[in-house]
Image (cartoon, rainbow, N blue to C red; front, top):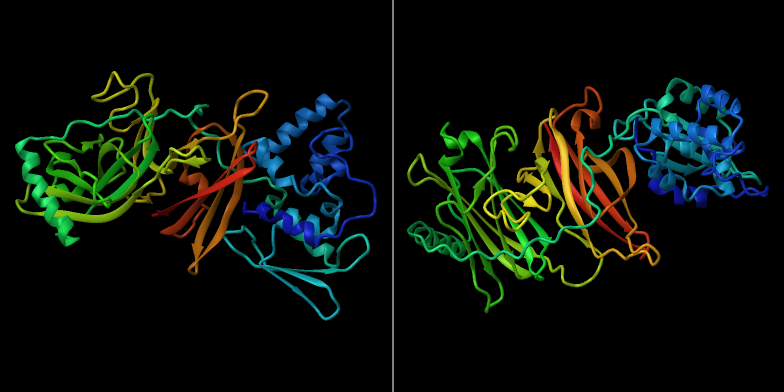
Length: 477
């Protein structure tokens, strides 16, 4: 089922003229008049008949729960979708069309002042046929002149009633409160191996580039730490065939972070094992993943990463990048990085070399073991999984707890432009979000690949009235 453009419902409010009649029934309350509200537009005939047989509000509430479960993963989606259309404008023909088909591909007016909505077939929106609908001005709202064409389309395509694809619920329980990262600044490695690597990194930073014999990609993720620093996580992903069949020990990453501030001290991620490899079972298919982390003062750094080939002497890959480590000390609404994951596990205690500091070891954050991806390329047999934390939401004065809502919208790149793909999700969430979606459930059957996607995440603090947005781009092959 395609996206319906619920985010643009305020446009409908402007386009649809208000009725002069009394206020419509409250669609949120499943009483006997519930079906007379906007929800009636997307009910099937069988659902209409079934609802009319109900006699108590308890029966109607149970019916409404099942009704929304067929259409949305959470009731919050319905709340968000209909929040702006419970005025009379939603009961006009234009409102009905908007609910059923979403926003048109094109909107025009003819010489007689009639509105013309044109819909074109598209995998991104889910429209299956070309449709042109005309609306004439009317005192009670725009009057649809092509009513039979709309009814014929809806009868042939029941997905326009909201029954169809839906994103599954989270596969792992949410953590209500965000776990602050531990303050962790290990002593600088003084081993002979580290002393050999540091001059290599110095030379690379001075030149700004280096050899490219070993291909790899790097991702940097950032999290608030208890001491006011920023936990900076550097993940390296390299193709397994670069190891010549010798396993992850055949590739040896090391790195340096040089602060732009003149009084800053460089941080060396060097030595015998500065980057810890993830198990091959947790890494993406065909890749090795390595991770190092360090608590850094916020600011701008030059990052140099080297991956040495330990099988073929003298071969290495080099990456030089400028990064900005965010400052989480101000008490404003914010988020950590949105980390695109290869795998995740919820555990009861810390793993790795820092057993006493729960969640401080490599790949650990709070009660989760997270293995990120550095290369945002997924196979269609995999799952899209991501993790992020929300900082400093306003507490509810009565309960002391925050009230957060997230909207997830997918976009597909077509013809060089991002087009809405599937239906947005709106859900309540805690300060820690870990979500996973099997790509077989996200993709349209027989969809041509590769395809480029973008996930847009909007986090709203409903108490403070603030909102922020994050994006994650990925490719499916």
